[in-house]
Image (tube, rainbow, N blue to C red; front, side, top):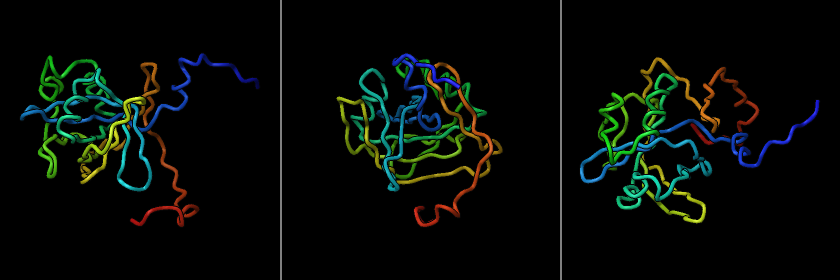
Length: 181
């Protein structure tokens, strides 16, 4: 087998990050969502980096309020999550347009999304403008164990997505490296 060179403007598709997420914000009582595919856990602490910037309406709200939520949709919400990412919150109420239910968070004004598998309430710790990275500290985490669809989905970066499949359990080999719980 021979390797084939990939154009550099497509290199990111080889490493597209974790599951597609919805970032919730609240500006003066008005809830909004944006779809993010570029994010990462920074370590075993509840710190997360997301890649966004001034081109997104929600970014300005995050910087002003210094908070947001990160909500993880199941694969059954893929069309809604993609739709959320194709319109601006300045033009419509995304919760209403896509049939999503905002729930009040406990420690931030930004909403949780009732239909999601999990949500994190976050505070903005830092912004690295040269790299478009917003550093978030999660202050509370929620899960939705009653959801029948448990699979998440991942953007490849070219308009296609990959749904989670079989889960392989190798915790016994990694037990001294994993956090408690």
